Length: 118
Image (tube, rainbow, N blue to C red; front, side):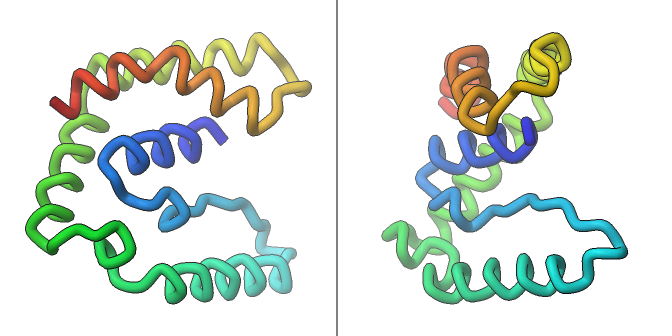
């Protein structure tokens, strides 16, 4: 859940629609759920069109922004910060919500993400 929030935050920061990313869990015993997840994601992705099109970006701009995002996600400072976020999630326990995770990622990693994308 934390990885989902982090990737969506980075995509938003680089101007890529975060709906282009989805991370969901399904066990091997959940074939109907798996099929629904993939089908829904495929439909949503087709609606968005080619990468960069709905964002108003040229292929060169998309490549440049994704390269910055990959470099940021490889950065030690961000990885350490994300490790601290996951520790906070473990302390919070089972009552954490997706909203809490998003707010925590935003509050604890926004400066690092912004600095890493400059």
